[in-house]
Length: 250
Image (cartoon, rainbow, N blue to C red; front, side):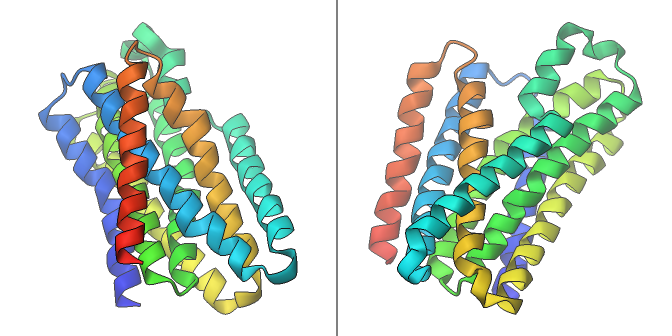
């Protein structure tokens, strides 16, 4: 349990680390951000496949493949529903564009709420990994999510500062989105531990949410500024790095 708590804090704390970097280096180029985010996408892709989807098939028994496919689509559909209710990072920033300087506080709160809502299922994915009992796979998943949280924490700082939010409040709001992820991790862990029968579906559900985030959020964002070639190779590096790590640690 101590490892779960430490990992949950680490996953949520990665957002805070990203926020600190966002404060210190507000002029980071799109090229650098795209490469970092693509690397994180590759890590998350490997974590989703190796740490969630394949174990789901293994734990599902006779109908493992069917349970896994169903779980993946339900997870993706849930994220799709959330997207319809609350737009996420690249959509909010893109919609505001140059007008974000005049945005009201309610807009900023919507922005933060959108990120927090999307962080909850990511935290649940990390918790489900630990609930499966495979510590190595769980750490792989948590590491991938944490890496994704760093660049996300970096890019949420500038819009809030530009909207007129004071630096201390900006940092507090960014940290709050990380706390949501800690809560999600604990929810996922205890849900699976209490009802082990749902483990195969929960693993696939968590994998589906991660695949959705990668495809719908991360890849479009990294290919939107003319650096798609470097972003593609960064994704491959991240994926292969986690693949090799999984084999060496397995």
